[in-house]
Length: 259
Image 1 (cartoon, rainbow, N blue to C red):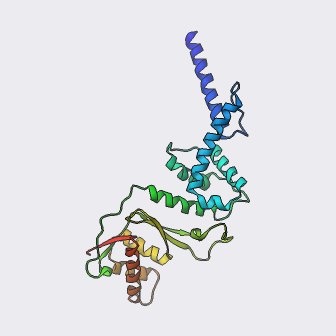
Image 2: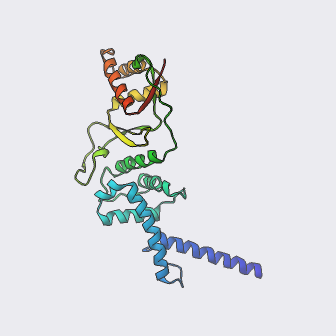
Image 3: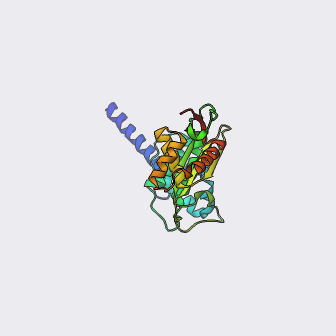
């Protein structure tokens, strides 16, 4: 009988915990456990919600600034209620929120079309800021940099967006996708400063070739010219040298190795 009573008490306590957690996550839809003073419950409700909302507001400041306050809080509440987080770390909340937007968000008419891409762009800044990736030691060009192998920094990430996410603000909110991809490089330099460079799909493809084939700038440009059927491949060399020099000065390219 004692064991049976213990088992029943354990189940009752577990049921109370689950009911308490469900209430904290979504008070409007889930009643609280009985016999708990609402004043005490309110402390937990407010602390839980305000901590998560505050962290999301600091991680997605532009997104928060362009949404109506009620819409923002409704979305945060829906995230808390709907999403099952897989990490206990606060620094992962932004990543969990992005996952919610990508896979679980039930679209609202008030959601701007660019919302997911803007959230991704803002998440990238935080992800780079806290990343353990490090730039290799500085390797200056030896001889002609176009004939050496560029080393792309692991803290320089490349993206093609459909919207100009780096320009979105309360005063500028695009209503349609751009005709051409918006190519951006978001990077962290040796001073641990986050920056971005507006680029183009051709430059991003050039970096893809360099990184995947570990080839010289000249070889990568030749491959690129072949892919785009350029009638005069050699004319791209001067352009490519200028781009590589610019990327090196921004520390998107960390250095050059002899070919």
